[in-house]
Length: 390
Image 1 (cartoon, rainbow, N blue to C red):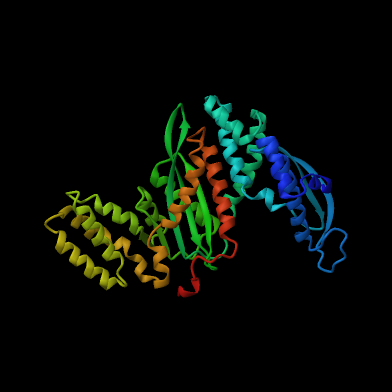
Image 2 (image 1 turned 180 degrees about the vertical axis):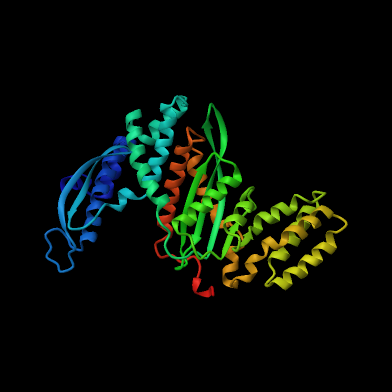
């Protein structure tokens, strides 16, 4: 290992190597850096350097296990450090590997199932760095699905006062046609104020049936202590929510409500005025102030936009539930913007696939992305101060 490092002694030598060999020269450098970083990780995990006598030592180095690691820079020969007396696997290999693997499998399945064109084949080669066979895909799929299923089915511990829901749609091949399949996602705020991915469900079923089964699945996993549900006004969700969470308050996303309100403007020039009126209602510090702004809004638009006024009277209460919760929480519970940002991250990955070969492939990639996000969220970063909630 040291002789390899000496070969690239100094940054100038590394740059000269890349200049001489182009992209082909990056692989050996990445290989060396990966191997060295994993050795450093092992030292930190053990609490001692090689051959060091220390009372802080937690285990012992036990050689290396060679693994062929496929990257966009080519195949690398990675020396994975082994230990005795301690559970250890390098984070430098784990981070991002799960969702990257799921993306590769989705592309590979398209390639193998005959969905591919020369463009898809080229993407497969670029992402995977090697030719894939149906046997390889089947074996990798089995291993990854087992891990992702454990994440989806893990029991939920403690209570989750706030739970956000949303649905994201992806194109999936089904019975010789392409359909838009809904994947339901739930995010919860735990007792420590951290965000968690509570569950995910991809199904080809009617909207209300899917939402109802998703709620029941979360309760079966241990979802409890819910005081507020936050979501947009999804089709089928209302009926399912009333059946499964009849006594839990619901906050309808204020951002989406403002957009809905503008669709009732009879003339284009009224859209901005309606948007401003909705903003004044939602910026109210308490319920009484919101009702006063609502009254002013009705007086202003009663004649110029009667359909909007009718919609406002029937729906505005659904967007004001957050006012009965701590003021410091209201900014983050009045919309589902947090989950919308998560959806953008998902779409950044799924746009590469465009059309998934089957439902399982879609759910696999989405779960992998969500598990990576979940692990990033649950590292002590507080989203809300839950001690403020009585």
